[in-house]
Amino acid sequence: MSRRKFLKTAILTGCTALVTGIPLATYVILPSLKQEPGNWIDFGSVEDLEPDNFNMLSYEFMVKDGWITLPQRGFVWAKAEAKQQIKIFSSTCSHLACNVIWQKETREFVCPCHSGRFDAQGQPIAGPPSRPLTVLEHKVADGNLMVFMKV
Ligand code: FES
Image (cartoon, rainbow, N blue to C red; front, side, top):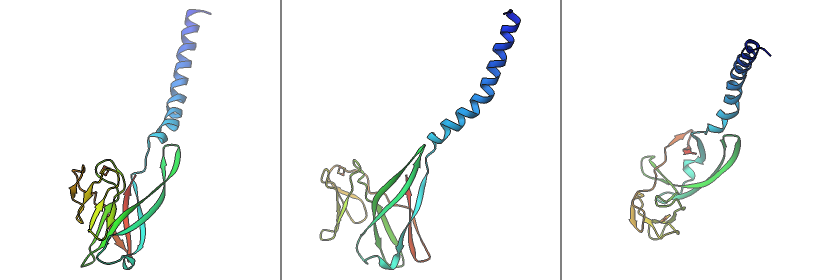
């Protein structure tokens, strides 16, 4: 094979690889980098919330993360207050992400992992947590409580 023919073949092969390889790689790799930002979850009628108390509201939705779709399950704490105001806290402890439980008698959230405690405003009052519980974005649509759950 002459040097000229070899170079021509090499350049042609390289160009072909670039033209087909970049779109193919983009098609294969990009979906694995994509993750959904979150979902609005419908928790049903606001009227169903027990007044003056935090209600445990469970959720489950599917999350597409790259090539796989997995269920995401959990719960939030919701309290209907005066004037249609609703307070929604994530159940995730701000220390190391265990689930906090509302104690109606003491009016505190308690984390079973390291005995962290939060008041009814979600502020840490005892134990290792130094940050408050996360307040979740929410809205009322057609009388139903909708909460935005980040994934
Ligand atoms: S995870 Fe809640 S106190 Fe540590």
